[in-house]
Image 1 (tube, helix red, strand yellow):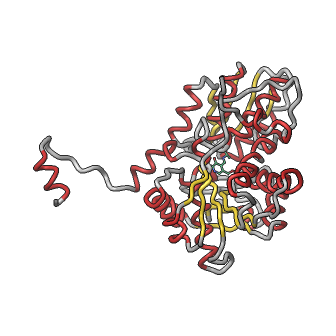
Image 2 (image 1 turned 120 degrees about the horizontal axis):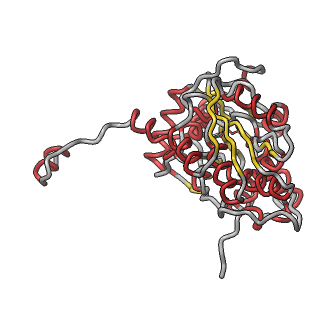
Image 3 (image 1 turned 90 degrees about the vertical axis):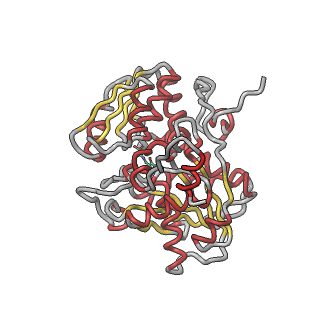
Length: 351
Ligand code: F0G
């Protein structure tokens, strides 16, 4: 038998795993790295790849860090895991807790979580708690409550989350034969940009990779604390996954952009939605709005000269568009309704 390995087994020697760590897996990782010539042309670069993290078992990159955080919690004898979330962390925590036989408690901001993510948390059997406040308020509650014995906090302040998320950088280097020149990704709480930079540096130290990428982080204009240099009291954006005003991982996220020669910038909601639709139509990849911020930001960087046209780029599409189907239906043309005959079809299509 040859089952596909999850990230703990695949990257065991690069992760803080011991003989006592359970080999927890939902077969996460090993996600597609899709070249798209037509999207590259739209963005304005010579070579563009989409790292489609929406292909992970719960539909987001969170699975890479969550599998390790939950395995380590189980190893340490935890009874429950706890997190605050804009939705994806909750879905992932709920799934891995189910697989590991632990209780998951997820704290969600009131009214701002995409329906698919809520559905996941509920069906995996998590205790779902809605907090009257935004993500930052929910994270404060989780951090205070997470101090209880035998409850493990699995937000990205948990170092195992960051460790697990480094594995995407290894996969990209393996697939391309080196690091790309530029890596663009959305930034919310600051964990993933930190993990990628750590992963690429380790790929150079340990895996013989020759170069490091410039890392470009994308925030939404209404939720851009890294760009403004201070927390934002009431963050607002259509990209609910990155509607975060007070990121938990601050300095390492800024360091990743700065030390790599990159930047963290902001794009408007309309630029995000425009990129979102264009990614789907030109590449056949349906990501969630927050993910599209990476492509929108890269395009902006090309337009203002921060990224040269002759550049090999990877954009990380962090989550699956099916999680936010309502939003897709609200921005796309509604279906055409016809009587059940071929003539009606021809008239509707003007054939
Ligand atoms: N993209 C998606 C789809 C996300 O869900 C998140 C974060 C990010 C990007 C930003 O990553 O926080 O590491 O900078 N979602 C978290 C959650 C906050 O609760 O699911 P980050």
